[in-house]
Image (cartoon, rainbow, N blue to C red; front, top):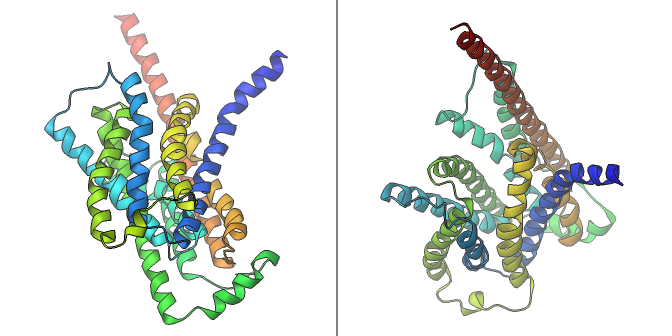
Length: 354
């Protein structure tokens, strides 16, 4: 009985990390269905962060009340910038682009975020690159490979792969590839790419903010409130003369809003913290590419997405690049730990001789 209990305890982080990938993949598919039914990305983003703020605020008040630092004008400006990127620029560009591209493409492009985050962290000197280390070369190679995989998914569209449940959609797909649809697809690619680059910059900015404002729950609430205020302006500007966009019914739009607000910003946030506390951020990030596979499988059934060989090969290249980066970061951590241990031994020897 004790052995079974120990095995379950060791398996919990792995099961939790896999569950998080299913939750994230589910949002992409649900949002795609809602967008196909006419959901406004701007109104969706606004409602989503309203729900997120309401859900997370009680936990922030309960757990961060005694350890929340004072708010300075400099910190307020950083949080405002972070909130503008995280809750306005990223969701509006991503979900607007998702209207014109497939769920598999959008989630695969998102897998390039860790590699791009490493690139921006290196520019801002938050990530060390030592050309004498194999791990540093692996980081550089992994970043290049990941970007190459994303480009493969964008430009290599043939041959398409037909399955029994997508045959009807396949003929419809071929009959609708006119110039207008190609323009819309290009617009979707650009918007999703902007979202991924913004997400990478946001990761770096969030790391900077958390160093001086280390209360994650309170930061989540503040970012959500920025999304509510700024998102209201954008939603009103885009959907002022469209009352139907603001109405909520018991459909996929409501499901997408509640799913994102409660599960993504609520439950997933807490579970991520538990997993990172137990195994570290590198362990958690290693499971991110699973979302690509999950979304590809689910969306082929749910929205009859046509898969191409370019998408599959590009996704595999992205996964290879990500694991190169994750291996390099794990290697760096081991080398730094060994170097610190040697320094501690040398320091204790010096103190003993004195």
